[in-house]
Length: 102
Image (cartoon, rainbow, N blue to C red; front, top):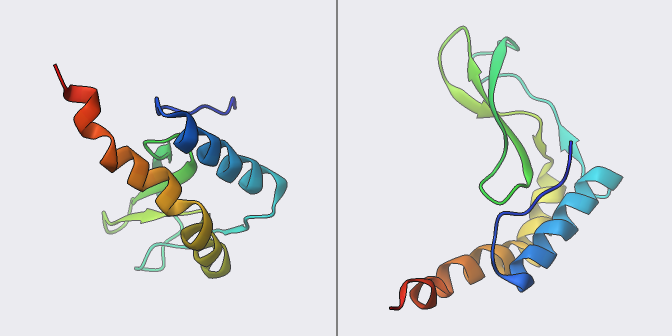
């Protein structure tokens, strides 16, 4: 599947591509987990988040709960939040005013 970014800001797009590369290379590890009810019978409802970063959400066919799997491991999430998260998501929030200025 082709990697993509959906942002219009060069700085956040750079960090989005960096996260995608780390996931693809295995530097950022993921794990498959069952639903909280224990079922592994989920229906994938999305494969990427709003920025194009792989993040599969599933709908459990047994209990109806939505859950992420595969998902980043705890260590990967810690690294992601310490390095790229704010650089991607804060820029998206702080520049909204200039997008809508007439």
